[in-house]
Image (tube, rainbow, N blue to C red; front, side):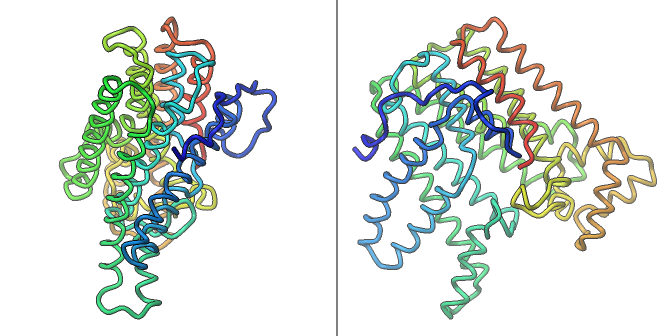
Length: 385
């Protein structure tokens, strides 16, 4: 198999003191605890996708270019958060000495699932950039224009991006099938994976609905979006996915700890995204600041701002979804902060990180995995991108 080239030894554990600090705390923790995991995931993806792109190129020259675009979306620089949580979910059961190659294809498949979600999400949000680059639909539209094709380039770009996302979802299934685990266990893994996908779609639908039904939205519904759109498929389900790869039985203290920890960290992860979407530095986040205010997306942050606002502030907040200029967006962002909503969200994040750490206390998790998950709970929720 293409993945045989990946080293058979597990990623090294490196003490945090041996790694230099960067501007990205998630990368610092990943470097501290899984120095080689991200590289192993990227190499697995690259080897698998090289074969897939070659096969599609044989259909038609244009298909080759399309497949290369999908490959580039999947291999774009990223934190590989989902494979990392799945990895530690697995390590927490099997320990640090179990060889990685047998499960590496399944871990890497989560990154293809993530690419599917990102590409479709960018279409639904009409986003211009992702990770500092043009989104898939914008890039496809630009190629349409430069090639002199007929028809609407924006419509073409959206159609191509939908297909790119679909292809990545199929690729995820195909790559997962390369995992060298017993068939019965792989079936349990697939059940967890399928539940993750269903919940992701549910959360995404609620996210879309919220933008068109803001009058009937609330903090509770915004948290529900965070729970299903982000918490489930970013932290909670990947952890359980990793435990399933290890053959962990359901309804055990370890599964209960992973479930509780994953929900808390996953919600905090989305709450940090809410703040970054308004106050983040575009040079770091790779996306323009204030997009959520421009669209009026009913995030927890915006819902809290409306709840805490004075009558005058609430009237001003009604401009969310209609502002366009950078100055207007900045003033609205200041208004949201003045209501106390941003500070409240920061407290909510801190409360969830504490909840996650409590969930790990006393749980039957291998020691290194416990240390890594403790660090990731903080790093994933204090990031700047």
